[in-house]
Length: 379
Image (cartoon, rainbow, N blue to C red):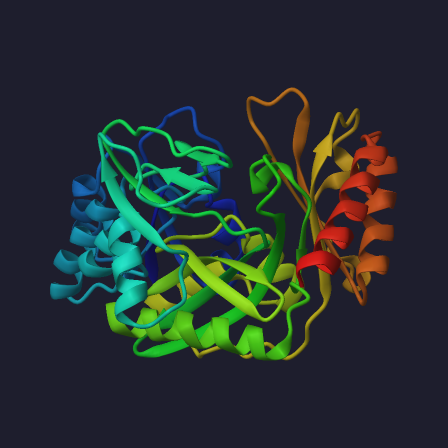
């Protein structure tokens, strides 16, 4: 059994699992200086784009393709590759053109939410003009990602340049939820609490906690809306939804038809690894997973670590402890995710790991207290 993986950046998440299940791992990568490509059985360094991965998939007669793409720009090409290869009988664990086109364009996503009566902040499209809406407002590039080209205006409505999405700014908790979808089966996983919309830091630079302490009716409503959109657009693979929650109300902001930055939180909290589910999808052994137990998981930047070895992945005695590194950052060694039977127990494990690594524990303690205050205020 052979599977083609596209992209080395997330390959470590699936390499060992695929090998343990008897899969021959073929990897394509466009950056010769990338890491973890040596974990594959066979590697092809190719130019950017999906033409070469598609050709290799056909030439090598693979059983399936798993695109490990964590950014939006290549997704339209991934969707085209999916259409072409699936006509040849090779499944691709990704969304097709319709879903991708909607997901990568925030204006189209807004229209999809409204069509399905999914709550979303008030919005308008403005081009080289001032918004009609009153502040506070959020101004976004319709194709922005990772918080880039997103600005909040609290007191005055700016004159925007170019075509922009303008939406109502809502004070509340930022929550994400990953959804798995394949062959008509849709499985929403666990909500992740990322902090407050009032926090200027990007969520990747904050502590995150799962499961988000939502009211049960709110969590059911969010999952119901996410499933509705996945089915309407025929989304497949793994999809990430961003939602703002305030007490018993919620508003969908956007969705990303690709692997999520919260995947370690999802796996730590539920025991379900989203990227490993993609492997099972393309080799025809996927069974919709059930969240049978929910642990309390915390993920946190590791500030100024002097020793990284204590942060390496461990599953000793049922203790979940996974570390992934930042490259090019001096102040942050990476992020660590831990879990326990309660947030208190999870934080004690985080505290121990920080001490062993010589990292800045005071910042972690401050973040933990802040998340608890935000949760109490908005949830």
